[in-house]
Image (tube, rainbow, N blue to C red; front, top):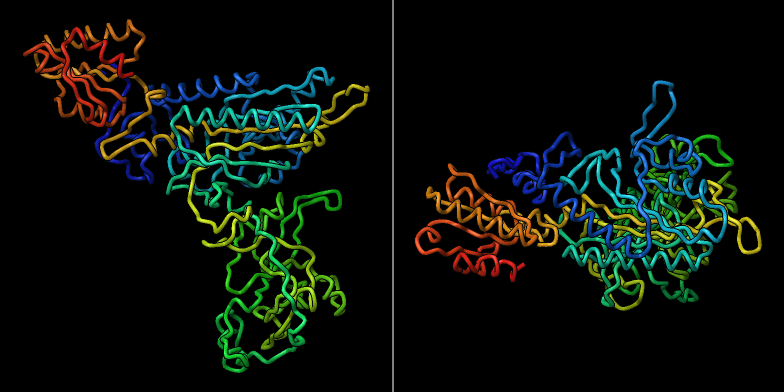
Length: 593
């Protein structure tokens, strides 16, 4: 440690917002270069390299082959898959001196696809899985949580290429199994969660989340043990309601009732129910105007905006992320005043289904917007809906009898107690950090980039693809986040920067000579050692540094060694402490590793 490129810090960096960011900087593993951009120091690189080695072992073990692409890529492949536009502001775009467009790669689907297209042409060449461990770039609006959400990060991404869908599924489950083994070896808790494919496209996807309170992803747990990302959660199909005895829909005066709360108060004051039950927000159907921002397509030569209407139960809030997932890869936002100028039928505070979709057509509305209902709105259900005039609402509007929808979407926030999609019971919720994701991409990229091979009959067919990512630097941060205490990091032995931290204490040269001998013998037995040989540093500082750095086992060669020839061996947390004769220290340490 007298020559190690290291400076530990006694205080937390002022801008560090999570434990892993605080400790990795204090212990001298990383240094901040800019918001979301980090420099790796020697100790950090040792841990990172060990994580990468475990990943390589497992991914090589399923027959994948490693390649390495540039991070700086041309615009054209991403334009072919529409992701140049779909990524929006989330990617770094730049021009070279010839004014050609480039980007810093956020992922490499296009490049892997084009590489296989360049080299392979027959079903005999398949299956093949390629992967890389490479730096990626995303222009995060607000980088946070140290390595967990940065602008530059290290990722393992793999891509499988098979002749048919069955082969794609096999590759998917091979990779998924490798992920489970990787996270188990890293001693990192994980939950496989059903997810949306999002901009990646494809048919099936699962995320691997590390459960922790600082996580940005909320996932839902069923009693069965299955889990879902909230965006991917589907409401179980609810039974239809018998509406045969529901009164006919009628329009009533509801002055000053633009909000659900005001509407409920008005309904109870002016139109009390005959059975004595009070009207509640759950009796109302709230309709919101949403703008879908589509990328350019075959019918539009530039991005375009579409206003739609979405109806949700009045006692629930719209979840914009869940709703946006229904329209991926398009993005959504609440409609602006400018959007609504073309739709005078949309009366703020009094919007209802009767001027949208097929109802709008029947009512003579010119070019009515598409109308969607949330999955909690079931056929036969009875609602108070907007009257499409200021100060009016319609009572006893029955879905399926009085109005229809152009589609059903998952639009509302999921609540504790909602039924799980598999019907095993009510849902509970936890937060987690995404550490990996696997996708069955299908034919999206092969069709967009014309990746075909000749099949057994000599016919050119598109190749089936899968995509699999692990956030390598994020995994390191998550391990730090879950493996520490109040004094510092506590690495799993498999990725610690060393296996033993030898500390020489005191001023007697005999202690340092004994420590050096111990280090030599450990290294001769293949043990990685950090040796604190600093002679003018107090024992207290050395112990604090050892606890902060987080090597699993500490050996102290000090006063006891000088007095009676014993070496203290203990776990990093101070537990499992023993004093052994110096000639037994190596044997004792090897037994503990």
